[in-house]
Length: 122
Image 1: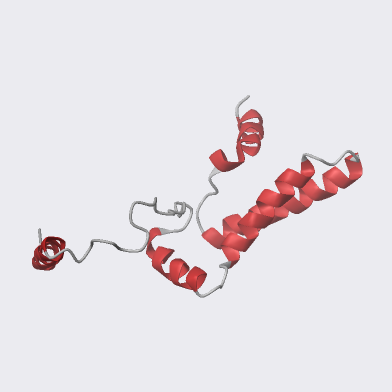
Image 2 (image 1 turned 90 degrees about the vertical axis):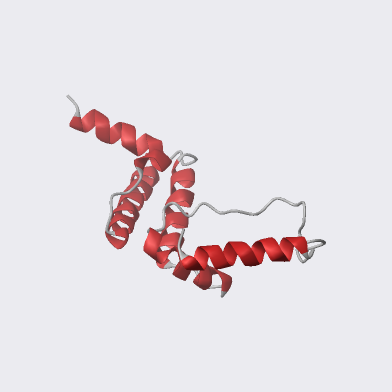
């Protein structure tokens, strides 16, 4: 354990002994944790600051569009319109993948993962 961790631990222990953590706002309520696994580790703090300032990162906005398009496609009856929306979705997926500079997690979009596997595995 480095020096800063020891100092922090000591100060936390002292604060607990002095009762400084008693009766805090939100005590005994669950924390609202958000899934940030899709954000590269080195950008998580910056994204959190932007989110708290009311700014939405472009990747998040595009990811929300992908999810809503996927849901919309499931409800469309017209074949031409569905194909048009699928093309739009594919374009947005490619754009999102390029923005992230890393492969898209197909587990979150399982129907695409299955289609890709069927095409790649004879």
